[in-house]
Image (tube, rainbow, N blue to C red; front, side):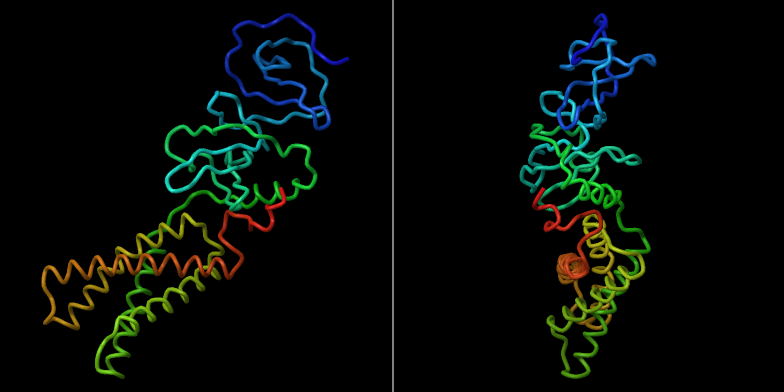
Length: 287
């Protein structure tokens, strides 16, 4: 018989909840207080009588704007943050890392704390993937795809910065030897080729990289490489050195190296199966 039995329990403190299902139909909630299972059909009145159910889905660490709990596999609408517009995501509870957000449009999988600073709440809960057999394999892949947010190490930055400086300097020397002058186009080509080879080596050695790692290595490499490129320019063209030219070269080198590293890394990811921590859009578009 549906329903529950027992006396109401007053002043129930916040606990982990499970959403109860019979088949694909949600029939109530369960929580444990002092080793006692309590049940509710609406999340307000809790009693000790068991609600008949087939299985239970645990809540995540996230809530919506109305303070409603978000459960594993819930489809949620995330607010605008930075340059990102509002997006739909699936909340996933990872056994080791906690609550993840799987963005259906991009395929990106991130920890919910990495979505924005402060306590993250979704705008609303708009559905659930629970009970959809067609989504089961993709859900498993999404959980396995997740990679923690890790920035570039000092070794990563050193390798890419040295590569960038050598690419610019060697291409410049080659142009000077062949043509008698150094053109910006040749230096840029040397930078692109050097970074492309370094990304190829990095992927082969360490595997796929995340978007966050690419942004991290790009910014840090730009700062270090700009100093190296400016120093090389000052050594090869001492007659042009001055305070303002040095500042201009540092700024220009930083911007160019950053953009080139980002674009070269993104191209490498596009040509080799995408970024780590993401599923291809073609895999999730039908969910």
